[in-house]
Image (cartoon, rainbow, N blue to C red; front, side, top):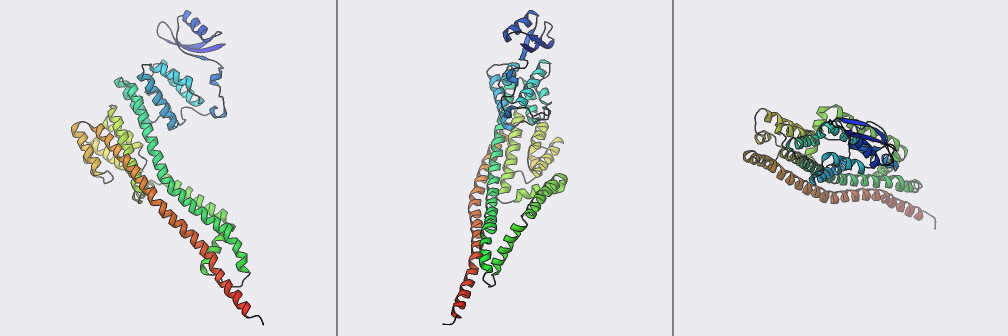
Length: 418
């Protein structure tokens, strides 16, 4: 059996190579006899490196540009933090992570990072080589390396990831529910106009009575959906594609849309509060980690999802860089709540800015929860009424012609000779 090794010699120089041995223990003994201290030993062709299922297969691509899912980041940061808290050194913690990782691409990333550690690079320097690690995480780890509290840095990264995932889930739930109800309304309209109304059309046409205007309109809609459904799909896809393209290519339109989103009743408060919650949470964590205010604010700015709020954070940062206090700079922009401005002022004057930001992050997250609940409570009766009106309109459009038919049938019966 052949093993690939990474080891240090008597001069503390890194050596790499391969050795043949029956077992791993025998390979280590052979290397020790050569005066090498084994740092990493991997069996070449080992089944542990082979994907055990299609879900574990490496589909190719550069691992340096691969994205890492938030759940995976949370797991990595949490486990590294726990192991280092327990007194396990970074190199061994990384090796444990490599051995337990099932995803092939993630294992390659961890293995390369571990090899970089043996080459004399810091963990933060190694993380910069991979696009999957957000700059905020890298800055926190870098600060942890500087102050000797890398375990706390991992825990702070895990906390950011956990809070961000929870907040994103709440926002998706809040905005997804109205979308679901609107899709339900559209589905009801399509089913009634495409499958129900046509069954009445032949019946109505057998009587030479003039149909009411409402019925004619519904029949026209039914004919359009049946005959030109493909055109409707093209229009919808074109509008969506055009909107996304315009939003990406036109900065003025993107800014106008971001500002409009904040003004939508029920939805706007959720977007604004969640953006401020994310900003305060990250600023709190970064300042507590010892990162300078300017750097912390720049990193926190980049993760604010709404670009209008992001622009205001940039304006605050520009003022702070020329000597203006944070609370004075924020007071110029109505998007920042007065209570946020007041709490930051208290934090700046007392030297406890991180604590003030942490409390404001909790407050905005609670407000986001309340706004989400209000949206859900308001949308349920509103969409129920809309669905009821749509269904009632379609039913009435089908019933109205029947009264005319009764008149025709009655008059024809009276006109027959006795």
